[in-house]
Image 1 (cartoon, rainbow, N blue to C red):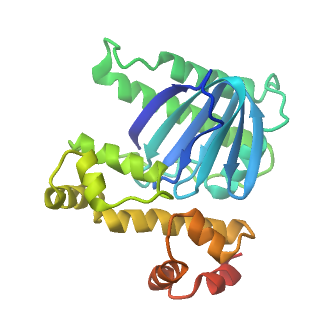
Image 2 (image 1 turned 120 degrees about the vertical axis):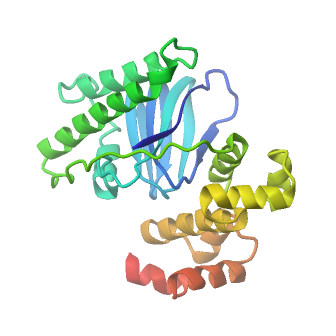
Length: 278
């Protein structure tokens, strides 16, 4: 398990309602510490008051909409690197569904929310223990996931696979490329070009493409197409949105281009893929 990013966000006083989301090829933990939010995920809207904790498996598009004047949350992005400690899609859907109309004082919820709250309260980029801060946070994350696993098992869901041996491959990565990747994941539905992304990274276009490919294993355009096609597949299998609407929602300017790329990847048209995977 590798900690890709952790951050806290305070949206109190922000006028705009729609405040975040996207699609990421990584697992994400989202903790609402104050206020009320509506999370749009997997064709459902979860209206939840703090404390609330959501589990977002990779490649599942989501939008967080602020519903109260005071709104604070934290998020963690994880590269699980083969570990099965994070609940799968079925379990995540069940857990997320329990975040609406819940009693946060219910004894089964209390240790989970307390653990999550302490995690973000202890997060301090200026900590004197910065050299081991990530290791300490990973221990807390494993504890949180284990508590959720026990909760789901107690509520009749099939057991989640036991944790595999964790391993880490720490490499120094170009921070500007990583920042661009996160930007693409949060804004995949918007128009963007490689030259624009390269300029935002303050890099020459050809060097940007080579550096991006070294980190992501794909060119920037391939990475963007993967994000959009992953989002489209999720919409096709979990909603009744028309194919044209899905094409528009994930950022393709032409339904014909979308259909061609989709068929290249899945060997069938979007409509036929929906029939086979709904």
